[in-house]
Structures are given as structure tokens and as C-alpha cells.
Amino acid sequence: MKIPSSLDQLIDALRILPGVGPKSAQRMAYHLLQRNQSGAAALAHALADALTKLRHCQRCNTFTEFDLCELCADPARDKRQLCVVEMPTDLLRIEQTLAFKGCYFVLMGKLSPLDGVGPDDIHFDKLLARAQDGEVEEVILSTNFTVEGEATAHYLAELLRAQGLRVSRIARGLPSGGELEHVDSSTLAQALLERRSL
Amino acid sequence: MKIPSSLDQLIDALRILPGVGPKSAQRMAYHLLQRNQSGAAALAHALADALTKLRHCQRCNTFTEFDLCELCADPARDKRQLCVVEMPTDLLRIEQTLAFKGCYFVLMGKLSPLDGVGPDDIHFDKLLARAQDGEVEEVILSTNFTVEGEATAHYLAELLRAQGLRVSRIARGLPSGGELEHVDSSTLAQALLERRSL
Ligand SMILES: [Zn+2]
Ligand SMILES: [Zn+2]
Image (cartoon, each protein chain N blue to C red):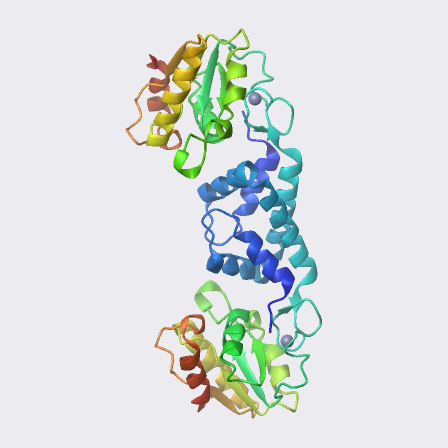
């Protein structure tokens, strides 16, 4: 007795999700087939759709369905300040504070040598080219104050300063070890305001 | 600033997976788009493929790509014994013991009034019709020895006996509260052998 191959392949395919082992992949597959076929169809469609439509913004590297994201296409943004964040969620979080009117660069990660994430994976060359467009006057490093976020900021600061760029770090108004996503807007706004030169 | 709609829809779609909340759906979406686009494409394909190909076996109710599953199509199986299990994984587990040569019926769940899972959801009418095919002489209830599995067995025993069917329960050789999936083959074989009439 063998399990049907399409079921086997679905269980296998679900294991690419982070944190999903063989048992929970099996549970997910049965759940989808048994209790939520329309949800499963919607998920298949959403995956294919996202893969087709989403790309990295040519300027800031965040996910967008166009060549430029909404923010990079906005002429009202201050081109002199470039705020560097780890993930698109961090960008959204800073936008919510209404305290920053400049531009962003999204690393889509953080340096993490133990996980094999190096400078290429955080798109360092693209950041460097972006920061050297002739309009950027200051790069504000707004990676998290976690161990890896801090290491990323120190690494970027050194290399960007070597290119003659002015670099600052978002102020440590956040609790040590804290993440941008989990802090209230006024603390985050304060941290942006009190950024210090590096 | 809004998140691109195809990304938003992907995050939403991932939330149908059991145990996946908004935060982990977001993390999964970024992981797929950022680190494993080929895996995401494979998942989309596997989902669509499984939804197209898989159906319930007309006789035993398990998932199959054909009208009848491999086991129900096998003329060598003993048609006089019908073993009722909760899930396809339980069927596979029993097959591994090599201790049973009869046929199966897969409930695809268990009674769980608190979760709104009633007799219709465990395909009781289909089981009744299957058990009354004129060939089945004994229905062996092999649901788990959990609270819900036991309740399901008691419910099924009562209704099947009311139809004049001989009903037995797999022996409690399994530890109380245990699940078929997690027991060794010899214990499971013993439990089948020592089933008691209900
Ligand atoms: Zn952009
Ligand atoms: Zn079958």
C-alpha cells in the first residue's frame, strides 16, 4: 500500500515552509484536502500570483509589483536621507510613525555568518550604488538592535564611510535586544530623531 | 505606503494552514519569496495537482487518484473483515504490521462535538452502506484510544450493532491516550489479535 503520489508530493512540498517538519506537513495536507479545499486552491493561486507579480524595487529593494515601489515613485520624498532597514515590515513600521520623510533601502535580511547569510545576500552592492546616486547625503542605519542587526549596522557603517558617505545609526531608544516591529510609535520616532553619527 | 496586493494575498492565503497566525504567515511569505522561489512554485503546483487528482475512494473513503484505492482494488484482501480507522496514516500503520488482511474504512476524522465534527463529517452513511454490502461479517473499530477516538468507537458500535452487524474493538494493547501512529508494530499487531466483541 502506497500513499498516492500527488498526496506524497504535497506533503513534501509543504516541508519547505519554515518550521514545518514531516508530521505537521502531513497534518497540513490532510487539513487542506479534508476541510479547506477552497483555501488550498486560493493558496496555490496566491503563490503562483505572488511569484509572477512580485519583484524587488529597482531602487529600494523592497517587494513591489512594478519597477519602482510606491515610495520610490513618490517625488515628495526627501532624496537626501536613505534609511536602511532589514525587512519590508520594518519600513512599514517606520512609515507609521510619520516621523520620516526620506527614502529607504530594504536589505531583505541581516548578516548572519552562522546561517551562511553574507553581504551578497543583503544586497550590499545594490545598497552601495543606491547610496552613491549623488543625491543621498546621509545613510541612516535602522537595522534591529539584536546581535545580528547590530553586526550588520557596524559592517555597513564601515564600508559606507570608506566611500565617503555620511552614516548614522537610529538611536538606541529601543530596548536592547528589541525589534522595530514590537516598539510603540513614539519610542521609534524618538529613536529616529536622536540618531547619532557613526 | 501599502504592501503590494499579491504579497498581502499570499500572507492571507497562508493563514488557512493549521497553526499559522498572522506573524508566521508573514515570515513564511518572505521566506518563500526571498529564499525559496522554486520551493514556492513547487508548492503551488503540488497543491493544484493534489486538488485535481485526489478524491475519496468509493469504497474505503481514503484519498486516492482513482475510483478505488490500491487496497480496495486488490482481490486478495479478505472481504469479511472491515477495519475502521480515523486517518489514512492509521491505515498505513496497520498495513506495516502485516497482521491484517481484511479491508478498511477511513473516517477521515473523529467525532468532536466541540469542534463541530458530527457523524456526517466522519462519513457515517458511507460506512454504514459499506458495512452492509453483504460480504462484511465483522467491523473492527480501530480508532485511537484518545477521548475522542473512544467516543467515536462507542457511537459507531451502537449504531452498527443496531443494524445487526458484528462489531469489535481493537484491543487496548496500546497505552491509554496513545495514538496508533506512535506505537511499535508488535504491540499494534497484538492489539488487533486480541480485539474484543462489543
Ligand atoms: Zn522602492
Ligand atoms: Zn479504498
